[in-house]
Length: 317
Image (cartoon, rainbow, N blue to C red; front, side):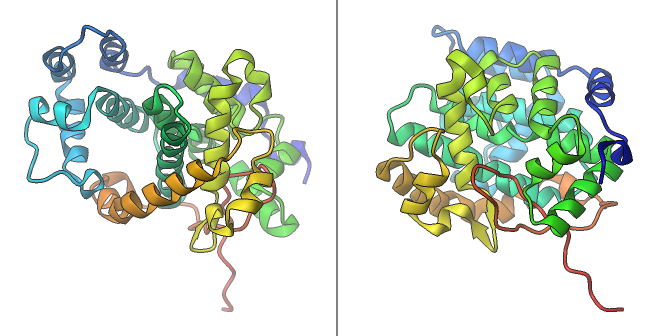
């Protein structure tokens, strides 16, 4: 299938990015407050409380089983000390992003499963290897694939062509994109991150999570997202991490080196946190919306490719 046949080029995508609404001011104010070492829980609560819609969403997510908190948390003043400043910041940013971007056109459960697991893995790697600001690594993992959301929402026909090529040719999502488009979801995501004035490290992680080297001084930060992305690629009923440590070290070559300590920490954190996933997404209204595209199922991926979904097998009429 030729690029002309898909009818998609980077100019079309960037024109659509320009039409996206801006993020609420509270997102940037929260990030500013969290980055201030003199900030108190009261300061953070005051900022979030100025946007009641986001405050309500944060409390709703805090009370999901994903966070495993004892009892009901009904105030921000209680939620903030329990979760910590960085986690609250990540919640505010994530609910704002996915509220501002329509996401109804593909299997969002599979998408969120990959996003959340990548977030868990990125933080687990950072903690195990003693890297600074593990919460920023966590957030980068959570939102690294936002470019896919825009493509599936606003260019559904072309996105289906990618999935069909994956099925027909046995290639990865990004390989199919690069054959069909003059762009890919990472570049699209980077444009969205720039539009929304994300911090430079998050912009870089989104734009270069398949190829950290062009990120320059931020390549080390991006490479953690890249490695987490590889480990959490959908594979059968689980993730690529299930293939074991030795094969993964080769698959992550050129990204953040996968230490045994980091590998074991990722496995531990996944076992501990992913059991809450089903309960968590049940509280997210987005997953109860109808989808106009077929449900996409995970498939094995090639080296250094990630975020793979394929069309379900056709059934006999």
